[in-house]
Length: 482
Image 1 (cartoon, rainbow, N blue to C red):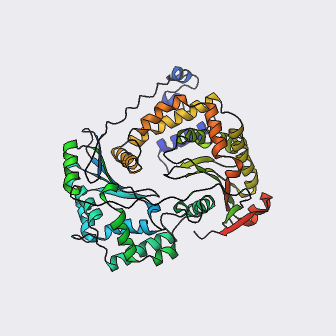
Image 2 (image 1 turned 60 degrees about the horizontal axis):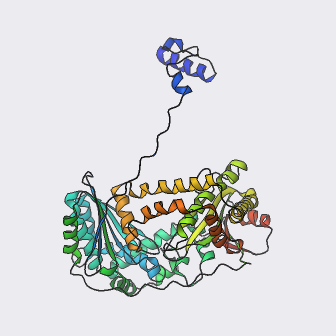
Image 3 (image 1 turned 90 degrees about the vertical axis):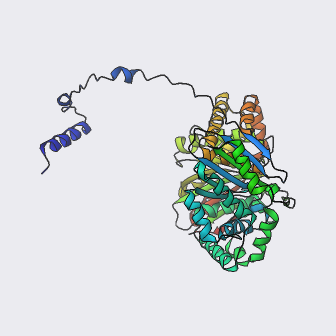
């Protein structure tokens, strides 16, 4: 049996849930007036957002082309290092770049795989790598005392890789295993990229590659990629945190200054034309699924285009916030899906825009029609001044996040430099926002989101989805991710 105090508490809880407050006075409460009643009547006034002050960045370049950037912050107890290579998955046939960068951990001329791992572990270095179509990077966070050795280990992997046949087989096997574990989301992303980019375009393929391609990659192709593409004129060393400029610069000089060589010209990206007007709707057949994931996709401006910032504002107003048009329509008005939204992936070449909604399978056609209604609205009429203002505020609030931690700051600087973008690009964007008006947004929508430039990809049960669509041109592909 419970103690009396616990019995009393249970009775009070049950009474309160039933709408009574008989227990209140016993504990000094009053049902009519509570001590904080005035506070509840008059909520505190909001305060203005504090101004964002971007970090001060110092930059230099070694004679061999290695770029060095630092956002110093002596208040931080750590140093974040991001060492990037300006050649990503698009620099080689599918799968080669990813496998090549994975093998950098396989060993060097002076250390094997275990020695490299132990070296980072002894420093307490927390690290990861990133790879996309345009660049690759190491990201490590260390104590100031470990900065020099961490940079030395990264430089050794980049400059002196040694790939044995045994280690190559091990890394290739690991990559093949990871491909087998790909998710349904990977399957639909592949389908969207295949719908937007031609067969000879590197953006069409997942950076991981596929099983058949990877099995055919010889070790010599990997070593050739590293020898040709990983050269000093493609290297960026970005740091943030507790390190002074003279210290960091001296470390970079010690590790990279005697490295010579140049990478070949970047692989030219093929031209991308809009999909044909009669392009089929693609259904990724996930048999038995009670939901459909809808993707309406289009090409978007590359990172160096003057259209990029207006397009980002357009995407935000369309599906980037809770009060965006897609969310208010599909979720709030119709209840078709929980979180319809838009996503923009900008690249050095034409990027990828997607309007996304996950809905109950019987509502697939209804939801798709509403997405097209919203796309037509942004093409045919201006946003309201309130919508555009909210999109601008939402964009501004994403900028501090890119510098919210030492690691985020180093990664942001490394990515900007690897993409040959101005280091103060975010601040420039903030300065350009006031001049962008509603008419400019509509013209951007007409340019990029015209109906004949859109592709539809749906992942769901084809037997349920296809009869709803009412179109003749449908391509059903199996989903092999499960």
